[in-house]
Length: 416
Ligand code: AMP
Image (cartoon, rainbow, N blue to C red):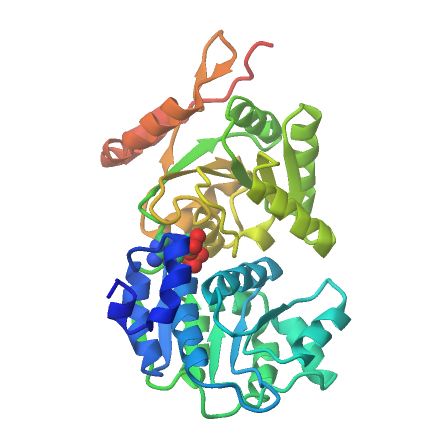
């Protein structure tokens, strides 16, 4: 018996889990796996990086492998995800958990030729992962039969609703059998999602592994107050002496390109992904970043979900996100699976309101730190300063008013 068989999973999953080095089930896995095995509907809130993908994929694969597929190999599990990157990520996880099991999986998303996806599905698939738009395309073209779906998973459901997928999801639901299991995962919850789930879930088990809308404890949150036009310079100084990998989030494609060009011109190893890039470019760039061939990845919020990069130590918000919920997702890219992380946000004068909304959402004040330069030396002492300033976080918050005023130091460009 191991941690996973104790939860009711069969031993045939042990080999891939051992290979992946999963010795303990994470909290969300402990809470969600037994009711999923019992075919209950689930409404789950889990922090990004908590292991939530395995929490639903493992029990579903286990069930699939216990029952031989019917003739024609119909799709039995459908998992919807809001972004192509997240869909790919889930698919990669499914592949690694399947190991040698005789199960088939496929992922479909837009921005790439549809024919190959049609062929793959035509060969018979047990577990399908899809973004709503492309899935609906295929349904409209009658290339897909979802009438045998046993379980529907909605991952990052809040984001799907935010992205306006509600109507498309409704249309997809019309193609599914009424009798099925529904699993809904969301990192953040709001009124919109509650009203959506009311009609969808039947007597769901509520699984809540952490407080809702909370920043992971393992991530140190820091703000630098800057002028908007100083941001390219500051980000350069933050990253020039830092050899670790960093994910930078920009609010717009324009800002992502601007930061990318600026950093590359200065010789840093950097690339940008956003919706103006082709799907092929996006996939390739992401892969290079994951392989460590690129040090800095600059992304719009399209990449805020689904990116699972081992040991990403640092996230920088070049802009404060417009939606407070996006902040939780962005910083969830660091401090994953037991690692520590740092999330730095550059706050321009007109972004204070956005920060206030974020602090309200996460019920936490974010430490405003002085930009750590060592005067005269033109050297940025990155690690120690940041960790030290984050360490004094609690103390600073005790006297928040005066600390904010005192720490609001102006950035001055160091002498070249
Ligand atoms: P997720 O929250 O699903 O994106 O997972 C975050 C990371 O945790 C991924 O890299 C998973 O491979 C990893 N992970 C998931 N479950 C476990 C586990 N039980 N033990 C160790 N790592 C895990």
